[in-house]
View 1 (cartoon, rainbow, N blue to C red):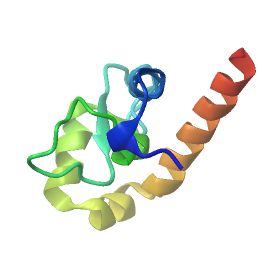
View 2: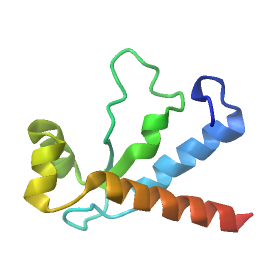
View 3: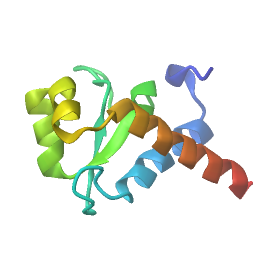
Length: 105
């Protein structure tokens, strides 16, 4: 298990690559590009956002409109409204990225 508070520059770059990867994906709801990576697990106030965090691996691609709606109505109502399991989607995206990264080496 990686301790993010003491991760190496290589591990930090890997985290940033994941966030950039998610930015390339279409919105899970409308299919448009130009997404905001939406954290399913809140990062929390007062933390240094530039440092790698495990929460960065719970991000999903949502257009700005749907990202704001998710924050406004909450995850339970959002999932029910759009018939989607956000953590399942996040895990699927992460698994595809890991598989892709592993096969690059």
